[in-house]
Amino acid sequence: MGKIIVTGASGHLGTAAIRHLIDLGTPAGDIVGIVRDPAKASALAEWGVELRIGDYDNAASLPAAFEGGEKLLFVSASSMDSTLRIRQHANVVEAARNAGIRHIAYTSFAFPDKMTIGLENVHLATEYMLRTTGIAYTFLRNGFYLDLLVNEGTPGVAAGGTVVSAAPTGKLNYVTRDNLARAAAVVLAGEGHENKIYELTSPQPFSYDDYAAVLAEVSGTSVAHQALPAPEAVAALASAGVPEEAGGFLVYVIDAAIERGEFASASTDLTDLIGDAYTPLKSAVEAVIKG
Image (cartoon, rainbow, N blue to C red):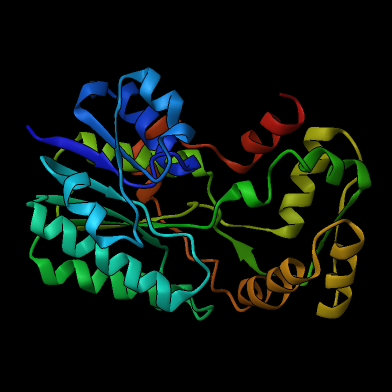
């Protein structure tokens, strides 16, 4: 069997996917981590993972990076410039094809045909590019990270007693990044996932009201959801320390899409793949509040 190659290996998702691959029984010596700076991937080297230099912006770096690979976890680029991102992805797809990769698992975007926020265009374009190669694919259509909402700042939100949004009734199908990394590892370590599309979202989307209720239950304090008009929501986030540009994106783009129902689509694909490893909302909140 050839190597399992993971791009973006020093990033949070790539590193977690490699950790789960090893946990699932893949020898570290059979894994190649593609990084731009090996100094930032010392933990992977300590695990026994081979590190190779590869840069999406430098197409010439990719053939050697992918040499000898059988399976590829293609982690999507992080640029906010969608046109640039598609060009970066084209470099990866062409290099993988030319290197003889036999199966590509690509981190796409959940329910892209139902979305209108712009990110879906990058991922649909990349999915179609991958189809042109004739290589077996698995489209890991990842939901938004629950980590954006449940993180080290969550205890402060609970203590403050208010969850602010501009989405009064909309539902969120967010899931943890670690769960998505686990799903990627299950696909790469197993068989029977070729030419499959997995919508990796929560099977039970929740509202901001639900989120506030969970915060209250776990923290033992009173927490309420305050839905505000968009300008007021941006101002409230700014007063809480969120930069204005980021707050504007969260409110005018993400919360608006949430309220339109674009993040309400549910699927059991993630729980089917990872089983009991799935982390529901309450468990994620408990982890950051209770430790």
